[in-house]
Amino acid sequence: MSHTIFILNGPNLNLLGKRQPDIYGAETLADVEARCRALAESLGVTVAFFQSNHEGVIIDTIHRAREEAAAIIINPGAFTHTSVAILDALNAYDGLVFECHISNVHKREPFRHHSYVSGRADGVMAGFGTEGYELCLRRACSLLSKA
Image (cartoon, rainbow, N blue to C red; front, side):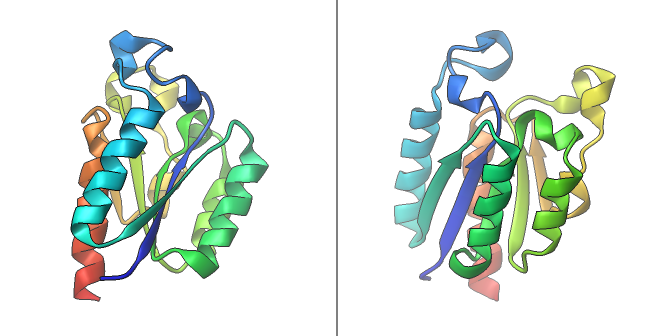
C-alpha cells in the first residue's frame, strides 16, 4: 500500500504534554508523531503531520490533501465545535476522514458535545488518549487496503 495520510491538529495541541495533563496526558505532540510514523512505516503508508492554531492554515492543509492524501485524521481542537469553514473544506475532500479527540468530549462541558466535523467523518475516536491517533491510522489503512 502506498498512500499518504495527513494528520492534522488544531489549536493548542502544540501544548500537548504541558497543557492540562490531567485531561490530555503527559505525552507531547512530537511523541504522538513519532509513534504514528513508526506505525505508518510498519503499515506501509506515509504520514504527514501538521499543527496550527490558525483556522485558515488548517483549511489550506485540507485543500492540499485533495491532491496529496488518501485520508485525513484530524483533531480540530476547539474548532470542532465552532468551524463550519473546516467542515466545508472537509466536505470538498474526497478521501477518508477520521475525527480524533484525546479526551472523551461527551464527558466534558456541554458545548464540547457538538462537533461540526463529525457530520463528515467516516469515523470518530474520542476518549482513547493519544492512542486514538494510532487507532484512526489503523482503521484508515484497513479501509484503504480494501479500496
